[in-house]
Amino acid sequence: MYYEQKRLLSLAVIILTAVVAAGPTVAQAQRKSPGGLTGGDRLRPGSSYSNQRASRSIRHARDYSRDIYHYSRVPETIQPSVAKADAETLGRNITTAQQQLATVRQEVGNDPAATAPLKTIHQHLASSEKQQKLLYEECCKESVDGLACMKHCNQILLDLDKAQAEHDALIRLLEIKAQSTQ
Image (tube, rainbow, N blue to C red; front, side, top):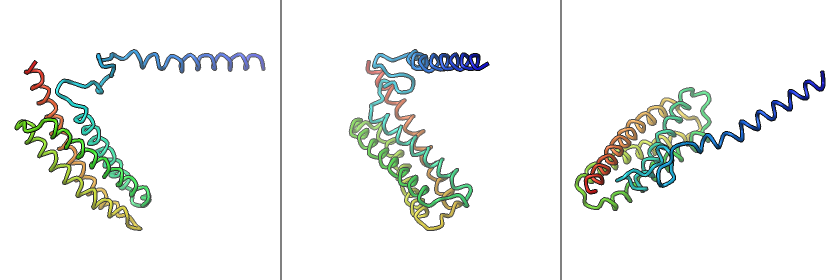
């Protein structure tokens, strides 16, 4: 009986080792672009690295805002230190997105097709930044009001969703322009 259990355990370890060793092979089988990137990380024509970074920062800010919103739904469980740290990170992501969009603005120059969307995106990010500051103030209190946090996060999400949609449209526009000049 003991030897049979030992043999089964050895067999399980061998199978587990084979599965773990095969994991990276399956991940490497994804289709790669000429630049060596996979999936949504490919640098598309007209999409600069700054545009990708700005988009990523907006997505991260949306994720943090959504997480804080869900965390605030049960006021009894809100720990001010956790809420404050997440609100700070949310603010850093919004600031990073604004900085990356300033770089994008320099890259596109005076292109009138890009200037209007960039201005709109800037307005949405400024509005979300204002709400983030109010959220942060709320999270600095000794007793955090979950409902107030949810309201701020909801407004931040609305603004960031609009900024992301406008930014996606801008990237598509830049791609079309890049394709038409080839």
